[in-house]
Length: 105
Image 1 (cartoon, rainbow, N blue to C red):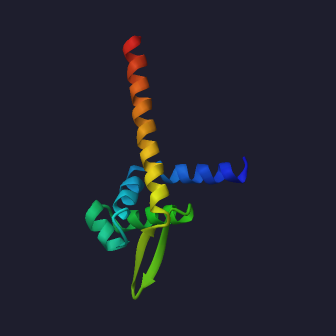
Image 2 (spheres, rainbow, N blue to C red; image 1 turned 90 degrees about the vertical axis):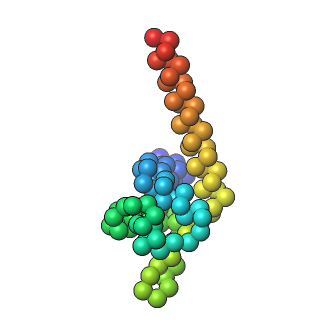
Image 3 (cartoon, rainbow, N blue to C red; image 1 turned 180 degrees about the horizontal axis):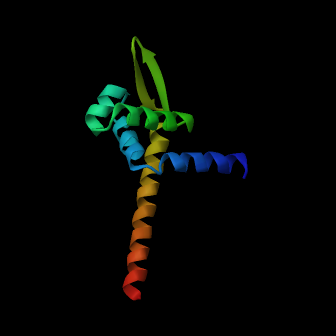
C-alpha cells in the first residue's frame, strides 16, 4: 500500500468510531479541554483521551498545553467539515441503495 493510501486508511479508521465523530463535531465549535469534552459527550475521561490520541495520531487534532490542562482543536476545520459531510452523504447513499436492493428482493 502506498503512503497516500496508508494515510487515507488511517484517517478513515479514525472516523470509524461514532464517539470520535461526535468528538470531532464538538471540536468544530472550538478548542476544548478533556474535562469539557467528557462533560459534553458524557464519556469517560479515559475514553475521551483515547479518542483524542487516535485523532492526534492521524493528524486531525492538535493539543496545546496550558498550565495543568491541554486544549484540543481541529488542525484543518474546513477539510474536516468536507470529510464529515462526504462521509454522511456516502452513508446516506449506501443506506438508500441498500434499502432499494432490499425492497426489490
